[in-house]
Length: 401
Picture 1 (cartoon, one colour):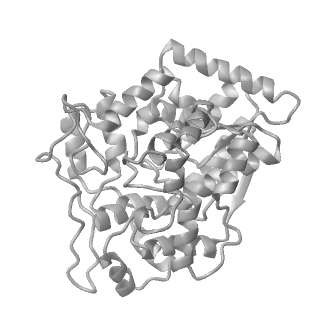
Picture 2 (cartoon, rainbow, N blue to C red):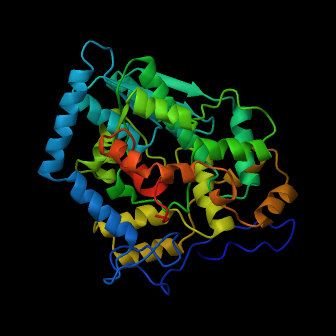
């Protein structure tokens, strides 16, 4: 991992800079480097993440006639199981490219989706408007869970004080719980997620970790108010949704061909959707997390997931990716000040926390050991699409990936 930005005085705020990976050992297939968490290289110099993607492509037939046929079988099953109900699937929406495109494809497949959105109160105006446009044009109903903004800020502030790289993991857990709640409320047995390992790569576990116990434990240590409106998902709830109610998580983009750039063009032309400028920039806390917090405090660049995927897919040359790494990550003007003001942090307090020793999920109570013990069960659940295969690969293994 590269050195985080140096802080010279109480008044001087560090700024993120680009990374130069040209002198590091790189994967021979992508641009993941030797400092990526959990990385290893085989005899051909190919990293473990590329091999994982390669195996997933084979397992799911991604972008092949076989993969398309398997997805069509799933679509027909969703229609049969949803017969007589108002909705036959739930699709999470954020205003971003992947989720918006997922909703568009669901309608094209003849499904009857219910859109679900977790509002962490940090959405950009563009994301909010994108959701409105997409739902209006496609005539899709919306289920929304809005957390109390002070409560949301308290959780984010707690993770900032915990000095872990998982600043925004509470949003991902809450979104998953919101999707399950929406499905259960309407008797729906399928949740469609717009994730593509081909377009986004595999995020190293050391870069991001999340589970309900982790969120609860960090908040208990550093939070200042009770969690009343935040939809956390503890282990009992996780088992209820997956084992008891058997709500299936389907990721269609793991089966079918997908181009993010083509998706953007279609969304813009057909639905009036507007590009927000980059991966995950539709939400301001996620944008701050990726563009400032992780590069400055932990010295790693979340752009490596997408850039490596583009190189792996032949959409970008390695030299082009290395050149982009050298450039400072894009950050909305005024976002740093917005973060400090919203969380009530003075410059002094903000810098004090940045100076604290870096920690990780290993320093706090989590479900990780339990996930590892139950690895055989989660394999069965993943093969049945009851939990994402990426969860099984990353969270139940004793080796970081």
